[in-house]
Image (cartoon, rainbow, N blue to C red):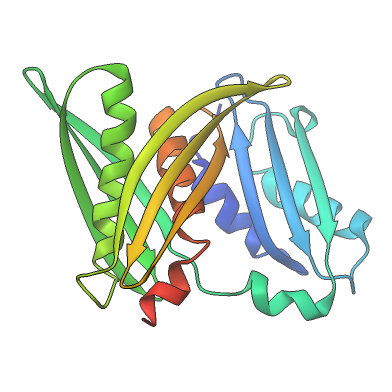
Length: 211
């Protein structure tokens, strides 16, 4: 399997004409799925063709990949194009029984990093990764009274797909929300936890940055 990460493949697909947004999931066997949101001015068949052509130089066997295209009305594009915090990278390191999770995010051109420590157990590592995302997000929030807290993380199976679900408690002066996000589990569970945490936070994030 060639070395392109899902993030690199996503950026490649997003450069295809007519593509507004994309999500890429691949497994350890070289198979994968690309979910694309496109404008209605190009036919789905042309978008699929161009996405497959873009992927050919980065995957071993394009026949093992599925490309799904959803076209949306122009009036909804402003919502899709709303700035969102996005994941640049995840990592971890171990020192004895203590593991450190670290993430790097980008929002409107500004990079923020977050780190969290935990005793190395499976469940605590998931929470540590989510908390590292929360700490990185705090670098974008304008007021100290606005906070995210990790409430719960679950790994569930939906049909044949494993999915990570993250629940966040968002608090700000006079208001609060329970936010949930999800991400299919690909090759890297840590990345799926981080992306699910971002999926939850992004539901209110632009509003919070303007508080």
